[in-house]
Image 1 (tube, rainbow, N blue to C red):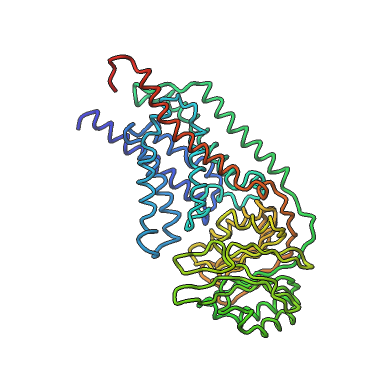
Image 2 (cartoon, rainbow, N blue to C red):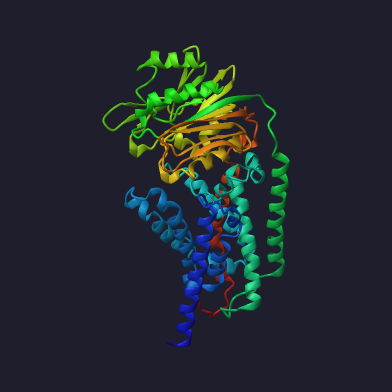
Length: 496
């Protein structure tokens, strides 16, 4: 093997190894591993591979390996056995990443790396914004989700939304990455014609992202506090009944136990009841509410046709009044879910506070909880029906919905996987996480403060996500501009 050929394959192998390291770091930063500090440096080995180690024409192979490998580690356990589409999705995304990033290294070399950190962060979060519009994706896999267990660090999400935290994480990765490339160049020069990184640019971006991180932490600590609003005792019923609606008797028993322990609002899981309780077994449910003196949030399913189901929830007051119906805002369409009340966001004014409801997959999108909060909700109840593979991941999304909207959240799950009670500052006050299911059943009970709903994220929505999407569009337009400019400045008679 000739020396150039040997060097080529050495670079491919070394670049692949670095990309795999990034994939491992990213995987470990997410639940269930929860090594959250790794998210701040997880992309750096990939950036070294992509912009220095890999041969130029194959530089995007680094990002393809990292993203495909990370998604394989993250998504495959979740959707194992769900069909070829989800099984091969990481590979498909890796191919898309390879093609989309094929000109990125050339762009940064043309522009002297002055856009490096901005390009990386805005494009990543811009793509997260696009994923947020896709019904089967939502906020799954958002880099910010890794920090759900650190409420002291994520309070600015109430201002900048989850997309703002994603921007910060990616700015830090790319800022540190740029500094690492600068140090790499001082020791190794794998491409003789590689332009030198301007010291001033490197220093500015590195110091800039460090300053942004320090400012974020300072703001988070300033916003993080103990709520002084009135509290209400809530209960999330946590029980794996097998067939979802086969556990009504058990849920009734757990309701009585929760009431004996002072619960004033009791949340039943998604599709805990077959049939609309306003029509079927209505007397029994009214008697249960009267007996316990509690507000009951009842999740139910009604068969419309052989393949279409109404997935809804209602709140029943102790005096026997059904306060309204909420239909799942983000239904699993391929499962036949629907509701005539979908797209309405009722809030119930009770002596205990203003109560809203969402259902399961709604918590994976930023819009539904925000609409409920804008209508005045101080407490949001979340009936859900998860499967074991997402038990350690799904409830973590709810931490960000709580902080974004400054409301408490109560999630009850009827597969016995992940029930949780979360305060307006993202503290997980009580939880039951049982990936294998809970056949005994329990009522997860806690006193939660009512939320204020006064965050900037409630008023402005995903404004940082839109900024990122705009930045992504800018670079798509700007890339061919730099190509044309470079071609005009190319010396006469020179061929590339």
